[in-house]
Length: 186
Image (cartoon, rainbow, N blue to C red):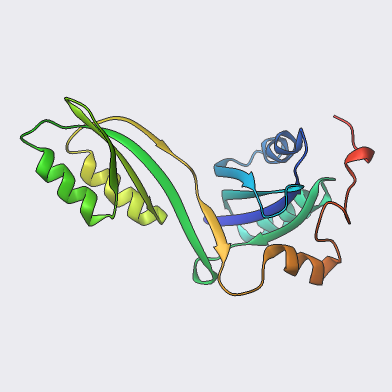
């Protein structure tokens, strides 16, 4: 199966995340990662969904996703056409003897120490999925006490935005022109 990254503009309203997640659940598809956050418009949120699917299944999922009332626009984010990043925060074992070695690994991946305790360091790093995986592999030799990862987010390269592309293709670009929230009750 191939990994696909979908960027989805949705109305910023209660229940949208649950409806999108349940669409994948009902069809037996696992979401590898899901990141949701605000956009430049307070009425619109952006979801970045990472899935492992085959081509035909991706077309079906995209079509079903677009049928959801609160979905405004969908675009697949391909690696060559987008900037993709993840945020990692990880707490590793560290004492005065190995601290310089941990700091060298952190510097190699452009990370930062956000907290130093007696026997651990909390590290923050931003990078693509491969960089984050490589950093974790190197830090694992020191002992990972705890970690949290944001999930992938992505933006298309170039001047055109997903909202502009949606407007060009469908004539729908904002919840003010595509508000169906009233038509759909939880």
